[in-house]
Length: 563
Image 1 (spheres, rainbow, N blue to C red):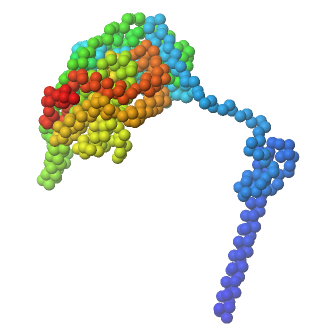
Image 2 (spheres, rainbow, N blue to C red):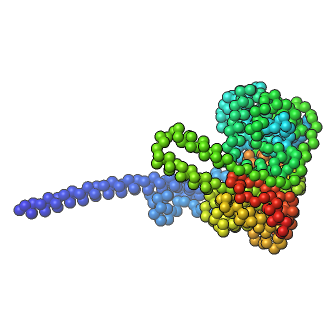
């Protein structure tokens, strides 16, 4: 009985569950049919444009739902049927004429240049034909300090107000200094062009050089110079100039700590008044209409006095040697004192610390650079293009840099895989108006310096040997140079910088096609001839770190004389 009762109860429960499921199914079916009808009507009402479709009563199976379940609908026109009331935009042309750079020279000599762009942003820069080459013993370090003092208080604005105005429009301001030029830029939406131009010109023309701001930035410059030892490549590049050049280009771009304390607001004011003159200024913009820029900037710049451009200070490349032994003893003493002051000095901890410190000193690297002159500079446009391709061709890089395994595998300097003790090995070049330098930077452990120098000399001699540069790797380097150039010019700030720097150098902006044509004409013989010309100039060598094992200048120089 109990079994029968249980069976009956189970049957009743199953029937109830089945009834519940049937009810749910019927409700879902009802909602689905309702949805089908609505979708069909919407589809017909939205897409039907023919007379037949407009007069045909939409069926429940028509519209989007029918398309989803694979049913055919007669209420929708075919995809190639034109829709009434829909305007088709014109197709994008196969070729869009690039914007031309327009240049206007004001009566006092200021040049205003711009190119338009459909982008909603704009980049505006004020470029000054002034850098560390114009410094005197009295004003040494002024360029570096002026870079740090950019966008500080002016005669019309406090520094806080400048910051607030830039933040209010979501802008970005930057300043950079080089040996030949100073650059001040402002990036923001192009709807704020009047505000951008006015603030930029005010900050460059009317700096106040408050004593407390100058003193604050002097302390920051000192700290920056002290940190230079953490950037061996930058330190060696400065050393290459001081050792390799006699004259203006030997002036350091980074202010020396021994002279920066002599700088004052009076010296800075005199330096700006002497060098920031009308004929040496270029206002360049990317993404701004020329007439709009001219109407805003001309009243702000036309009152600058007309002063003839001074002759550029002379520089002579002579070659030379610079080496700096890192002061490891000071590092050891300071570190040990700091450790003793901050941590309880237990015997085991102290021994562990000393062991690690000895390993650190043992692993000190040696950094060196070998460089030669590139005569002609930017004014010899073909050779400047060839040297750019040569750097791309030689390539190189660091063992611990972005790119991971295989980085630089298609460059000529494939030495990192063959020499595991090399930490970095790369070609570099720096080009100026009338000269330039080209060379190789390397970093290795002290015991491997002689081998690393031999490898560097061999690689430089290799590209100067006929037949060692084949067409395949040259084509790859040329394509890479084009790619980097074109992608960089997609940036508004870089395009603006290109306009400003070219006008300062050439008085005009040469078209991109001119550069690409020059690049396409480069042959393996051009690369070989350029490399031969470079290594025939006097050697400049610079080293930093543990330089005990670095051979003499004459020893390294002889490696290139035996080529």
